Length: 511
Length: 113
Image 1: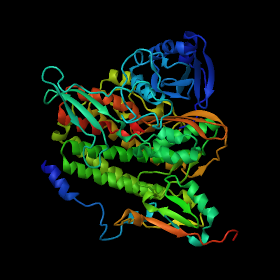
Image 2 (image 1 turned 90 degrees about the vertical axis):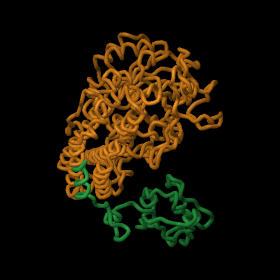
Image 3 (image 1 turned 120 degrees about the vertical axis):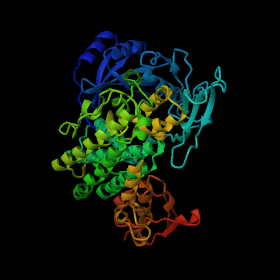
Image 4 (image 1 turned 45 degrees about the horizontal axis):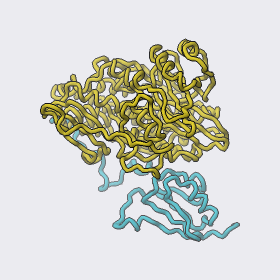
């Protein structure tokens, strides 16, 4: 989504008063505050205290490395970027203040070789163990390899590690679980997510935005529209380009169709995980109808190639939408209604995989996972950009934070997506694209994918080629809540149910 | 469970009659390109190679080498040189050897024509 212009806000004014040596600028469509690195901790304390949500942390450049912290000011309608140059190989520890920063501190260590000054052990989260000095990375190799997180095979008492993966079952992404258990209950869980690392951010360097969009869509194939839109919005913000209004509505139609088929797929996965094969077949019939609808409307079952920087490549076939949308959603709704009155299904969902509101807030979780824990976070509503300024979604929330709450949120959202698509088509959705100048700039883009808020930051050189593209799909945020959900009084057989309800991708987090 | 059993009987449809009959949605799917040798010279072939994001194209002297197995049917080659490439309509891709998916297309257009 695009363009929220820099403006004064209470949080920003407070930050400028709390730190010294800050300078204010605009990065495309967000407010940027450059700080001395020594002021980062004070800034993080102030912003977390003011209720800002740390949405991302990443590095760019080399000698010096430039740290970027992206803060979502959900109540004030914009994002704030704090930047600081790190000249040595250490920077002030941030995850003690904002726990949501820990996974990114690990990533930055693997990619750039700099680390927080706390001395805290950093885990391997992105690059494989064989990544040597010649392995493609964004900066330089860390002096000491990151720790491979492992539990001792006997963890005190009778607990032991049960390894599972990375090859798990047909059609499921590679992921290694280390389940620490005393036999049935999950005492602890950790994951290796690097098996699907493809060096995407590295590959984007030197490409034009249009060349890069092909790869960006493949960050996680199930969010081709959402991540593609966030990338396109970042490029448009960097170059001060606005996509045509009818193209913005087309993006939203595609994004809501993406949400629908993802929620149908998550429902089918929930049925599979609970052993309800007829329910799974019912949800998969709805899923197949939605995928065929995508093909009829946009020419691709998974909606690839619709969004491009500057606009869209295709207009929706409005007749195909009107002819198929309500029928396909009706199929999904009937399956969901039947599931909602099946006790053997509900018994497996209730009180399983609980994420409390406090956990969701501290870890910076997003999307249906956060909303099912009472966090009213939806970038379509909190940071609205065209067409969501005129077409506001009703945000579905629940408070229990369990799998059932996530199931209910998804199906309420699916119904809302159908309403939005009808409204968007009524307002007029078409094709159209703006030419992109070959110019320097940087910008932030975002979109609410089926898994939650996706963020993309793009820096361009004077030829309009990418110097740094930071891709942060929602999966990157939400996997860090998964182990907490599994530890909350769950047993082995709850893990696939919890995983289906999170509906994340490994590809998106490994990138 | 009985309700689910009855529901399964009532809604127990397969999603497609394919391959016994053709599938309606197939006509709408993106398909790999078919290249027109008569519209290809070294210059147009090089433009096609440059826009292919999945490295499915390369040029060897006066031959365009097309690896259908690497093609994602993104359509960028058709956008770049519309007269030289068009959707093939072929979505049933099967071969007994990986090498059979690599096509060699002669460049028959004379430069400047």
